[in-house]
Structure formats: C-alpha cells, structure tokens
Amino acid sequence: MDPTGSEGSHTRTGCRQWNTHRVNSPERLRDLLRQHPLVDGHNDLPWRARALVGYDWDALDIAGPTPNHTDLPRLDAGGVGAQFWSVFVPSDLPADQAVVQTLEQVDAVHAMVDRYGDRLGLATAADEVDAVFASGRIASLMGAEGGHSIGCSLGALRMLHRLGVRYLTLTHNDNVPWADSATDEPVLGGLSDFGREVVREMNRLGMLVDLSHVSADTMRDALAVSEAPVIFSHSSARAICPSPRNVPDDVLETLAAGGGTCMAVFAPQFVSPDVWEWRVEAAAAAALEGVAATDLVAFEPWVEQYAATHPRPRATLEQVVTHVEHLREVAGVDHIGLGGDYDGVASLPIGLEDVSGYPRLLAALAERGWSDEDLVKLAGGNVLRTLRDAEAVARDLQTQRGPSLVRFAG
Image (cartoon, rainbow, N blue to C red):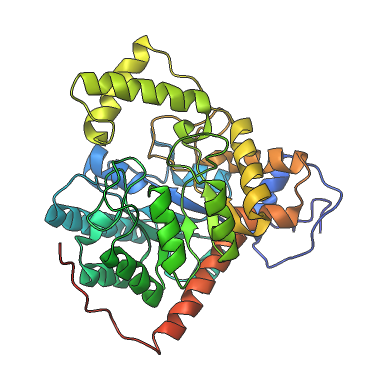
C-alpha cells in the first residue's frame, strides 16, 4: 500500500481499508476509483451518436478525443467504472415511432460495446458490473428515459428488459397516458392504475423504477406502490434549485426509507438557481415565437441563439457540492449517487465540463470532510446496492406471480 491507500500497480481490487490521513487531490481520488467503481446514472452519448453520425462509430470514434462530453480517454481520466447509457428518444414521438427508435438506441449501445469490447463490457446485473470492472473495462448498462418508450405495453417493457435495459424513467418532458411529468400540465395527479401496474411489473422484472423527470405526485405514488427500492438517475435537490425536475425533501426521505438512491445531476439548469431562472425566461421568450421548451429538437437550437444576446449564467462545481451535501443531509450518505447527464445538455458546470471531472468533485467533497468510505458509497456503492436489492425483490416476486397481462385501456 502506498500512502494514499491504493495499490501501486493501479489494479482493481476489493480493498476496504479506508484512509484517515489523506491528500485530497483529484489524483488520489482517481486512484480510489481504480479500486471501487464510479457508477454514473445517466449519459446521453447514444442519442448524440444518432443525431451526429447515424450511429456510425467509425465517424464518431470514441477511442480518441471527440467534440462531445464523452469518450473513452476521458471516461478513464474520470475514473468511470460503470455507466448507465441512456437509450433516450424524444417524448413527443407517436408511440410506434418511440418504441422503434428506442430499439435502435438499444442496438446502438450493443454495437458500441461490441466495437470497443476491450474497453467496455455489457452488464445487466450488479454482479456483472463487478465482474466487468474487475476485468479493467467499463461496465455498460442501459436505461430507457421515458415511459413513451414502451408504448403503453407491458410486453414491450418486458422486451426492453430482455435486451438489457435495467431502468425505465417513467416519463420524460411530456406526460405519458399513465403518468404525469414534472414539466407538463398535470392530468392524472400522479400515476393511473395502469401506471401502478407498470411499477409492479418493473419490480417483478428487477428493472429499476427511475423517478427523474416525473412530477412530485408521480414520485409519491410510485414510492407508495413500489415493492423494490427506486432511483433518481439524474436529479438534484429542489430545496437548493427550484426546478420541478429536482426532488423535494419529503420525497428524499421516503426514498431513503425504502432503500433507494438519488443520483445528483450536473445539468446547470437543475444546479444553479440563476441558470434555472434564465431558462424560465428563455422558455417564455421561445413560447412567444411558437417554440415549446419541451420540444428539445426545436428548443435547444433556439435557446443557443437566445444565449448569444442574453448571456447564460454558469453553474459551478461548488454548486454541485452544495446539492450533494443537501441530498446527504436529508436522505443520508447511503442513498446518494451521481448522474451527470453528460451529452444530454449543451454545457456543464465550471470544473465538470466533461466526464473527466469526477475526481475533482470527489476531491472537493474530501476537502469538506467526506471519508473515503462515504465517497465510495456516493460514487457507486449505493446504486449497486439498490440494484442488488431490486434484483432480490424480483427473484422473490417471480415465485409469487407471472408476467402481468394487464392492457392499457386508454
């Protein structure tokens, strides 16, 4: 052991001896992440690959530097040991198109993992994450971002699970027929009866229920019905930044009581109150020109033009630290994680501009007194425990009931 507590060879081990006398530098924290996987909850590189090059991994070769937030050298520099790749598609698509495009996203992730098989390895369970990480590769999981991706079909949900998808965000920016979104007008006041059935079937499958993007009432309904712990794959504290995409304190408390994990997001509009206020003003200005803020294809280019004449405030790493510490204060250190949302937004906080920045964040927390044990929990230990618990619930439920035959009756 060297004085930092990491093995000099930088091999990945199961070492659990925590240091009390430490140098709180990004370099030392990067060494810590070589022993314990950092599991990021949400990365939109697959959608970027679709939009930029039609999934041509020759044209977007992540083995070297790319113009995006994510590539293999920077994932390595950031100490990322496991990644939930988002298989997002826009939430305003017709149901049949949403399902097909989600399948294309899943296919793209499989193709990416196959192409870079020496650096990436598919994982569909917590034990597989450990095995891929131990092999020196980045464990690659998938999460579907929005209930529109199943087209109101539990059969489609089961097929996504068979293809390796291990969480479903119940909504994206728009309501689905069975659940209210945080950024749409409420219709149901939370989940419908079919929405509750979706949650129960996800519990039976062992697919994590992801409550990022959903309304606070949907959060509460899902937590009340779920038999397994749930996650927020990329959300932060509403008490710090008032975006409805963030999590109220009462929900954080309920989440923790059920064994779940809230993974702090880095997207500036959910981190900085000033950026959130600027975003609200931009959305109002866009609406006057017939552009809806929930229409990402139209709004994102529009807002970049707006920023040229209305300078956008910058979020900072220090503000992310404030969110993480609030999440810890309310939910507890055993129920927090990280979900950067890289390649899902145009810019990131100062100090966290791309996926190489995670050791800087952990170093900042270490400077504030966080122990190595607590940092390992935040980095990935908590969400892996939550996944294992969901898998255990699924094994039990599968002895009690078979696949749900409920159909959406809309």
